[in-house]
Length: 376
Length: 121
Image (tube, rainbow over all chains, first blue to last red; front, side, top):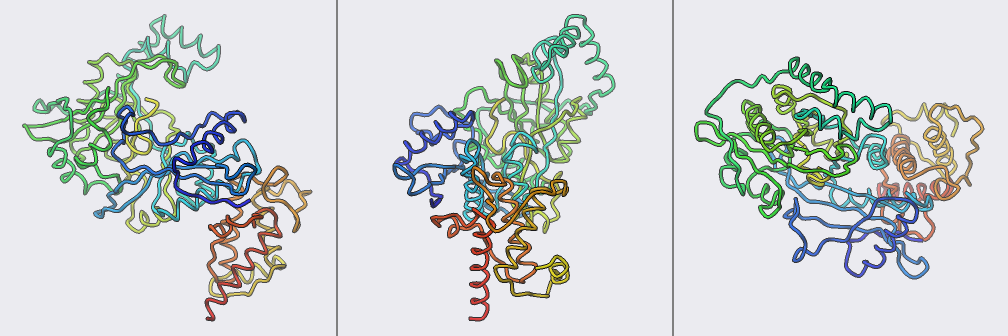
């Protein structure tokens, strides 16, 4: 049977539905959805970025062509040490091999097809180095690194009562409840804050303002700051509007100014979770994305943190790879935790990074990249 | 090809013509290395008919990608010819060239022959 990878079209909707049904029947939770109809779809993050879906068709199978795999390419312009180049995020490469080993060659077809269409590829998230997609990228010679995870507990009682990631055994649940109800959890968090205090210099002229959209001021911030970043997707106003469309509800754009001049911004989420795999029923504050000159990063974070605290969140989380932000988060009292959020660069992108001497901590990626702020 | 010969000819700049039997030896070595990197499973029998993927195949998706890339790399090192095994042509074949050690060797030999013809022509 031959395998042909083509751009998804409406005519394959039944074959795609059958593919998803076979995955579900085999016990997989993965579902490859067809593109949403933009006229009726609810506004979403990254809505303005060009996204193309591809399917691997097995031709000559019983009943005509069958979908045996699929992936998504999201095209973005990236800043790479002074140049702007087209790069694509590859997401959801999924093949029927996850439920039927007869199709183990399909993943390879998907990956090499994607690399042929756009050699400069990256993947983000993946759930950890042991997950199939991360292993596939690694086998294909891609470079992978984990994007550090930062968190700050704001309400210890709610945290220990709800943190599903820690409450995964009976013993741990009991321990978390003891910490919550005895007040020991509060003491532990207070002690941690004492040992890792906020060390952001006082600067009264720094002000935060919630804005509806990214205007020309965001271009100023981008132009001022971009030279300090080795690799990142463009963060000018036009791109930010595509990533975080004004119509998306529950998305806070915080503009940070000092002496009346814009010095940075952040994109925040404040979500009341219900049954989240890691965070249970916590009210989660997320610093999804941010940008600033290095000397202003701590101010941007500090004001973002203050905003989320005022909104009543229980916990604030973020993933950040660039050294500027990795220095700023501890200054604002955040601590690091285990990260299963990975960045993977294709061979071609890795080669460009090596030529430009771009190391992992020169790369600015966070939850705003890849699939965007999902599961937050 | 005996292991010592492969080793001695693997230096960059020394190119060797590889025929199908050379390729089978090379692929068997790669399959063994990837399937069992520690060498603990000594009884693993790999020959021309060994299935690389499928219900009774040795590898999952990740393993198969590793094998194909290793074959591309080692063939390039030994022969001095860069080939791309995992391309649309391979995928468009009714019987996958990646199905067995033998079919992979046959397909790789064809690619090498074409690469050689292009160099000469």
